[in-house]
Image 1 (cartoon, one colour):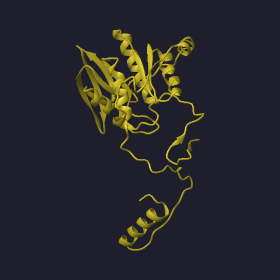
Image 2 (cartoon, rainbow, N blue to C red; image 1 turned 30 degrees about the vertical axis):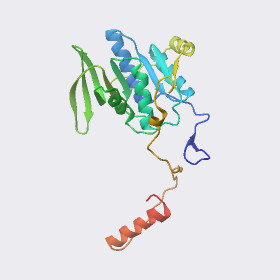
Image 3 (cartoon, rainbow, N blue to C red; image 1 turned 60 degrees about the vertical axis):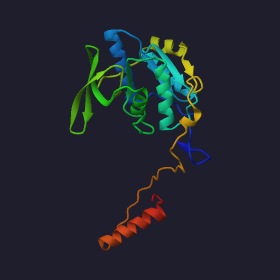
Image 4 (cartoon, rainbow, N blue to C red; image 1 turned 90 degrees about the horizontal axis):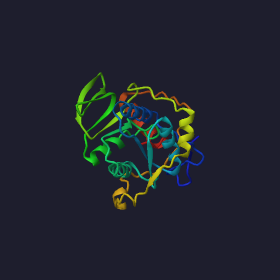
Length: 241
């Protein structure tokens, strides 16, 4: 169960086990499949607290070659995280970047696209198929009511959606090997990012636990009076307006 910190603006993460985002599992699997077909190296890059190393070890156990943790990013929001990841990835000069289509904690669905824009490379979101032909990436991107067939010059970034593959289960030997693996760590100072640029433009005023009890209220009267009463209720009782 998540607990709000004493400052009322953040969550207490002590004792929480960090696991890989399910959409990122598809990204890791797709990268490994590409390496198995064409060769190369797969590097898992994560920005987060020290506990995030366990997530990287999961990727290593799945078959990733190495991992990099960008530390000191716990207080960063979308812009700062995007800048940190873009700078970290730039040190690797990747040909193809795969990422999950969204994180399942914040559901922001923006970091990967911002990273691509900062790196100046093309990108496509929510792909369900990936092929490499004649040095170009051919992908299928899901959209409401259909899909797009897109072609990209490399390097490029893609976010993966359910259906693109079936992530493999780590084998016991790989799990044991991953536990002993050395994970490279980069700090924000290593990446030479101006601290002022990392500051968030998002201001959190307060966090509140989700209301668990169900409420039902019937509002009678003319439409205008109903709307006015509903507005007052949301503003004065629920304090959401």
